[in-house]
View 1 (cartoon, one colour):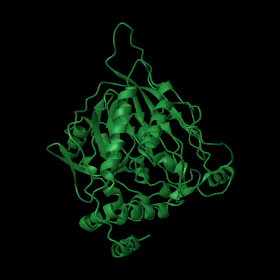
View 2 (spheres, rainbow, N blue to C red):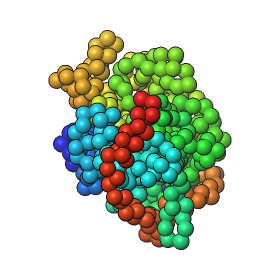
View 3 (cartoon, one colour):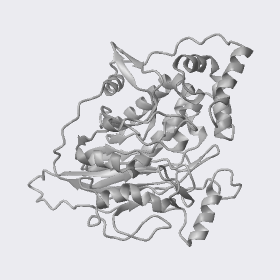
View 4 (cartoon, rainbow, N blue to C red):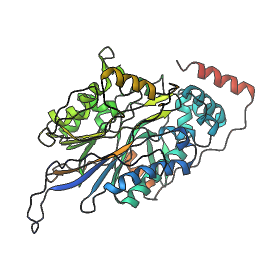
Length: 443
């Protein structure tokens, strides 16, 4: 386990105690939810072995909290597969900034990226990810499948940039040009339960950034399991009424919000679609999982893990939480820079407590390229809560064609085709053409 992961910071409250007589099994669902807050760095993604070790470290952090007498749900963080584009290119991982790393990666993989760029007419940054997607998708899914099996947990793998696939014979074929921010849910045997694509992208995920494809709202579904009727709202989606309302209409009882908040936690920001509504980020976060569980209809619990750490010149920070109804968690507490309130079943403390001015200064010290001795010294940890729900009344949704393809891959019934042979290096004219295309990316 990486040395930067300190002993687990725990937060726990039993939401609905089981008062059934011991000789009469309750029909209710009793389970444990676990949220892991890891710290990432570029070095975790430079090889398959490094990535597997980083993912395993998170399950090892959760292991002491896994309940032996009930099912366990472990939820990991958003875009934990995105930096796999660094795999095999250690120089890019040391580039210092995202822009430099992207350019180095583009040039390093030019013979593979250029055909995608020209054939599918996508941006250079999306072409780069699509060109590397077969190997990275296989590594990501197989790593998560093996961890779900080994630890015997229901696993929300977080999310990763994922193409859209279809199954033809025993091969997965990629739909041209599509790259979603996709969460994958697996069962304790490593079997696929379902996927969910992020609908509302942040500016950093759109064409000015990593250039992902928005997911269709009408494809969001709820998956009934022994650990709740699971609906996924990745990061910004959990702030949006159209997403939470659609999940509630389908009977969602446990909302999963994998997160990667790309800014200092104590900095103010305005979230789309109203960037003029500037407020402290912790205050804004009350409009996601906490609001969904304290004011919603069917949504009873929410699990919101947040990754921390400076990835090249990008800053990620936050406070992971598990939320519920006010009567489930009457003890008043809340994020920093907000007043205490009921509804937090478990909450990871931030790195410090104190006056707002001091906390904002600490956030600046932690941020990437601050040069301060506290730079990149975030808090990591794990939270858990024992939860109870009545039997599910939610029907199992039919699988999409994409899910059928991923299920076949995870079950060993299909393969991702190897990348086509590299084009011969086309020399200076091809490089100049690529640079011109890169210059049109709008940044």
